[in-house]
Length: 489
Ligand code: SF4
Image 1 (cartoon, rainbow, N blue to C red):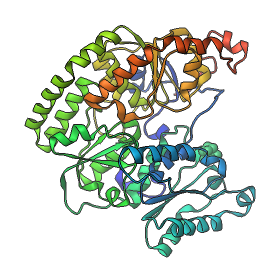
Image 2 (image 1 turned 60 degrees about the vertical axis):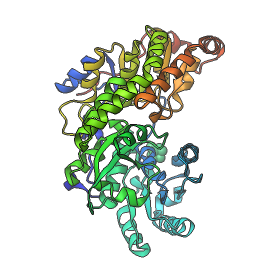
Image 3 (image 1 turned 30 degrees about the vertical axis):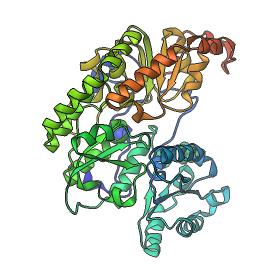
Image 4 (image 1 turned 135 degrees about the vertical axis):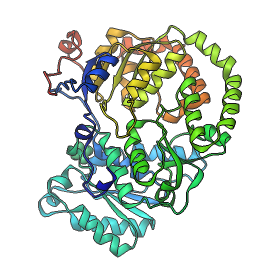
C-alpha cells in the first residue's frame, strides 16, 4: 500500500474497503454478509443531505497550527469553514494554545473560471497565503468544479513549491470522487504521508501518535501515568510534529473510521506499530487498551498499578451510574467505529440498545488485523437488533425513532440532533469525541446520560409542538426504508 504514495495513488473506500451506505437488519447479519461477500448495498433513490469528501479532507489540513488550507472551489464548498473556526478557537482555549482563527482561503471559482481555467487564481491564492501567514506548508484542496475542468493541481503545487521553498501539497478530494465522505480523511492523510512525513531520525520510545479530532485531551490521562506522551495528530499539530510521526513508539486511534489508513501505512512503511485492540471506550476496553500499549512499550507493571488505582477511584460513582442507567433504552447514531465504541460503554452500564444507525460501514479495514470493529462489538455486547446504515438521512431516522421510542439518543454529528429533538426524545450530541475516552470519560458519559434523561418532559414538549417539514404521505408511510432500491453487490 505504501508503494502507492503518489498524488492519485489511493483508491476510494467503496473500492478499497467495500464500504456500504445503506442497509437495515441486525449487526451480526451485517457482519456476516460483509465477510461472505453477500452484502447487497441497496441504492437509495432519494437523499435529503450528506457530506462530501472535500469537507472531510479539509478537516485534516485546516486545524494544523502552522499550515494553511486553500480550497480551489466555488465559495459554497467552504460552507463548513465557520464551523471549523468555532471548533478551532474552542479547542485552542481548552488545550492552552493562543486562540486564533483557522488559516483558510477559498479561491472563489466562478463560472468564468470553469470555462477558462482557474490556475492563475490558485497561484494568486497560494502567494497570498504565503504573504499573509508565512506558513510551514500549504494544502491545496480540489473540488468538483476544479476536478470537472481538469485543473492540474499537482503541477501548479509543484511549481509553487519551488517558488516558495516549502511543501505545497495538493489533495485530489473532488466531492464526486467518492460517495463515502470518510474517503476524504484518507485522501487528506494520504497527502500528508506522501509530502510531509519523513523517515525517523531516531525512535522516541515515549511518544504515542494519537489520531483523533481536535478536542479535549482524553488520551493524555491514560498515557501520562505510564510515562508516555500523546502526540495528537494532525489536529492542533505542527508541520514539524507531523513530519516526525514516524519516530513514535506506537499509533493509537479514537476511531478507526477516521485514521486506520494512516496508522496502517505508518506501520508498514516506518515500523510504527498500530494498537489493534478497540479504542479505550468503556471500562473493559480501556483496561485492554492500556495493557496493549504497556506491553508494546515495556510498561506492564506501571499499567497494572494504574488500572487498579483507577478502578478503585471510579468504582463507587460508576456503580451508582449503572444503577440509574441500567435497563434504560438507547439509540446510537454515528460513524462506523465510534458508534460501536459507544455501544460498548452503554452496554456496560446495563442499558439496552434499541437500535444503531451508522453513517457508513467499512466491510474491510486497512489494517492487517484479523478482526473488524463489528467482531469486537459482537464479542463484547452480542447482537444489536435494528441496525441500519444511512448517511445522514433525517427523514428516515425520524421514522425509525418514532417506531423504536428509545429513552435517550446519543449521536456524534452536528445537524443530526435537530431531528431527534423534534421527535421528542432526550438527545445527547457528543460533539467532543474524546470526552467519553477512558475511565474518566466513562463517568462523563454516564453523568451526561443521566442528566439528559431527567429532561425527558422538556424534549417531549418540543416533540408535541414542532411542525415537521415532511408531507403527511411520508409521515404515514410505514416503511422507513421505502426509498431503498433493490441494490447491487
Ligand atoms: S460535493 Fe463538490 S460541489 Fe459539493 S461541496 Fe463537495 S466539492 Fe463542493
